[in-house]
Length: 250
Image 1 (cartoon, rainbow, N blue to C red):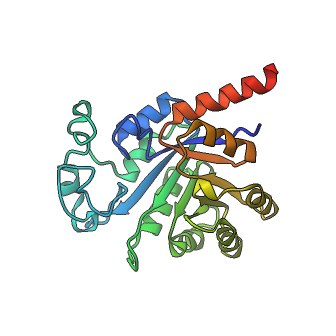
Image 2: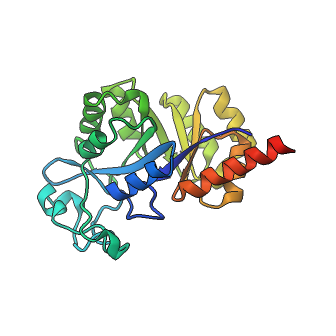
Image 3: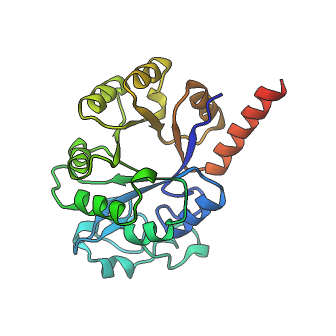
């Protein structure tokens, strides 16, 4: 059985508030092979770790991320919504996370989040931080925005990129091949043997999202995907280890 990388979705987000330092620490404690994080720009141009376009769901504040300064974002509580244990959890900048992960040997998946027809300098800022912390070999930048990934490649062709897609994976492969991406990041239910065969032919890696059910994790490992993005890295690793033991004990 193939041994895919287990990539913690927004950190170990089933156990700590997503995209926070606590979730990242938990993912590392669980021996995750990689950590996936979402990034956006604050009003004053800082790359911050957050998924939604607003802070409403994951903090005690309101408003769009792009309309709030870093100080305004830092003043909010990003932990209490999840559990009292994480009260006053702060938002992180990508630079803070890269500094924290400087000795981490796993993959860092940075997903660029952009609203439709939103134009800003986030790609240049992300690429510059990857270069500053010498993380080209350990980082992949993903996005649903083909334009963002093309910008990343134009800035630094050595940064790995992965295109996200939620519908036809075969079409996704055509996009990735045409735009010279390094990987595809499809919705896990769209991954088949045929898709894997085409991806291998085109030298594309498959990192699939977001997979929490053990039977689906094993199925994807059997199909030969390269990475599994999951909220429960401990369960995913346990399932892969169990499947490996069953294979070699039989």
